[in-house]
Length: 575
Image (cartoon, rainbow, N blue to C red; front, side, top):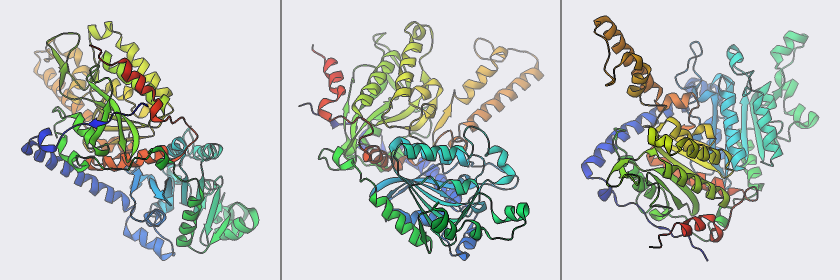
């Protein structure tokens, strides 16, 4: 019987890093975490207390209050897309979180995706990027086969910006296609309708398996104001599409309830009727255990300066149960770590970039920089990714990468081909994959390590993440290359021209550095969420449980017959 040979990885904090360096890193990271908390709080406030008071005055709950009542008491909310549209102005208006909350929540012991219109932001209207955010959440649920709960309170498109949210492949209508795909795949969808549901807002809940309507709710293709103008009829929206119509006449809704609290209680009961989680089955008798080295220590392990190194092994040790790990092919492609650990008792595969210097197998007695993909490392990661896909082991990619090796030798060794093999593997994997951008996510290495273009179910960034083709200074040099000599010095004696080139390079560097800000990336939906490093373990626990919750839709092999055992056996050193 093949066993998974988990052994200790990493070490205690004082062995990983001296106290002074740890405290310096921790102080810098805590400042970043405080900024993240402040910015989260601003988003969570929506348009502010005044608008929440208006909601309460109507006898309704605020959107985040609904989420809090829906989820299991004391369980976390893992929100995705918090910073979509961050810093973006629409005239004088902003749309915090694009006017919609999307979050993984535990309901009746099951992970579900909650999609809830923020009724303090233009009555839950859809802004530019709101449809894309909803569709992204639907895609996450579809890939994991976890139920979707819609808390609908949506007055339709924010009409002044309709041209940027109505048409196009991922425009508002694509939400309904995702509704249909979820339904076709057998993913439960449950909707609560709490207020204005006009046009697209009215369509969104209809394909759901259960639709609850409160007495204040209505679903209409066109509201009373539009009908009054078009047909000169004096009707209220409740007259046109309230619960009396849709529960008792049209059949477009199932249950009529008096208020928000009742609807949320009944939705919880509906979720409880769906299939329970298979996670305990796939633990194979193991108990969920925390890391031996505390996850909270991650806050001080990452240097504030991205050019400084740290131990990737010590990071993994603070993410996996009991800090136990099975590393495969440890003596090949040493710039990469690949292996398996448990998270909350469930097996997860890990791919991580080592940092610092490693031995160069092609040039004895020499070393080369890690954090870069070389031939052996690419081949190792490709083989590991394929094996995890075959064995049904969810994959976590821990990125801190500067890119691929470059130069004459790299091209001679065929890195383009090896890289293409890895990209093909990650593009065709069906196993759940989750990507965490720890610090650098640069160049084609970002792609090869299952970056967002390769459709991981979720991609997380930290407050120190930097996404770019290359660093600002390097890109400025590349952009002005024709103006520089072989030593990258400005090649002109004209003082005015020199000053103009210097100014242009500084501006280019500053712009690129700004573009690498994680909040800008999250605002553009170039990453799904920004999380504190100290929160990563909790996120991985959710990833693991959600990945194993549903059974029967993908291969999950018993650990005795993993193809990873074959890989390990064939790579043993036989002397």
